[in-house]
Figure 1: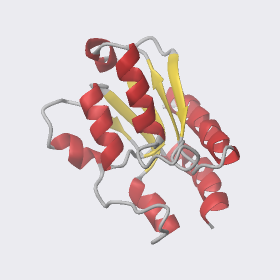
Figure 2: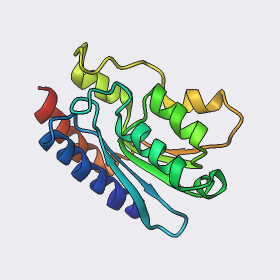
Figure 3: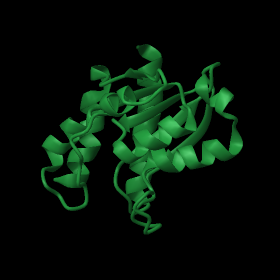
Figure 4: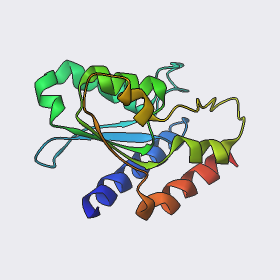
Length: 158
């Protein structure tokens, strides 16, 4: 669990960078089987005018160009907030073997409400992955980091 918190703290830093760059507060990173951070990504949706510019999807586009599916199967994606349906699809098709997230998408929805900038689908990543043919491991929410993640979101959304 200690390693989870270490990596998730970095996703918060990436989320803070996203806000500084004019985007919503989301961050993701990819860790190889040895524990090395090999890719990092902040959200770019607003500044790039790209509805698919979520941190996880953007990270997966980069990862799929750099690494083989066999390599990615032994990697873990860490994300500040549970991957949405689109990001879960990118993770699934990219073949990453494990997902660790800080807070649930439902918890984010409870905070943001019906904010037009965050039209959350009530579809947990576990449900999406369960419908597929791959055994993607999922850890989250990680309660040790909840307060820190919610803090940046409260500052941004409220």
